[in-house]
Length: 176
Image (cartoon, rainbow, N blue to C red; front, side, top):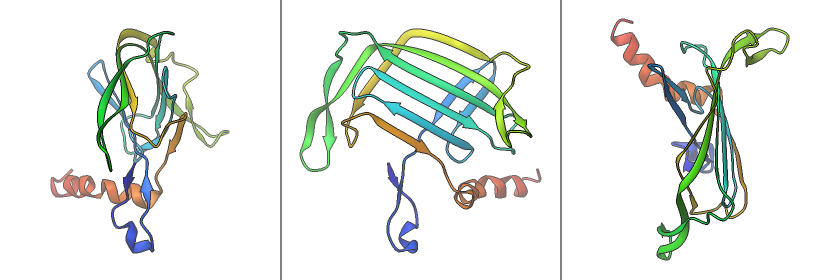
C-alpha cells in the first residue's frame, strides 16, 4: 500500500495497493502490473496465496493472463520472524516457510467482439498449463491483513498514461 504522488492536490491523500506478476518463459518476459492491466489477489493469514492478473495493454506485443497459486501442506506452520513496525520496533509478526508449493498458469488473450473484452484464446492451449514446483518460499505478515486479504488493483486511464509518459517520451526522443 502506497500513497499516490500528488494526491494531496485533489484535497486529501489517497493510497493504492500495487502488485506485480513477472514470468520469464521461453525468452519472453510476461509482466502484469496495474498500469498495463489489472490484478487481484487473495492471501489467507497462512497456507494459501492466490494471484491473478491480465495484461490488456494494446501497446504491448501480446495480451495475456496469469494465475499463481501457492500453498503449504497442513501442519506446516512456518517460522515466526521479526519485522519492523511503525511504533514498536522489531516484533514477531511475520511468518515464513521454504516448504511451499506453487502452481503457475499462463494464457494468451484475444479480443472478443461479443464480450467487448479480452478472453482466453479458445483456439490455442495455455502457454503454461498448471506447472508446479515444490521449491517455493511463502510469507505473510505485517498488517493490516490479519484476516484474508482480498484486493483488486486497477488504475484509471489518466494515471496509467502519467506513469507511462517517461517511456513514451524516451521512445519519441530516440526516434522510435
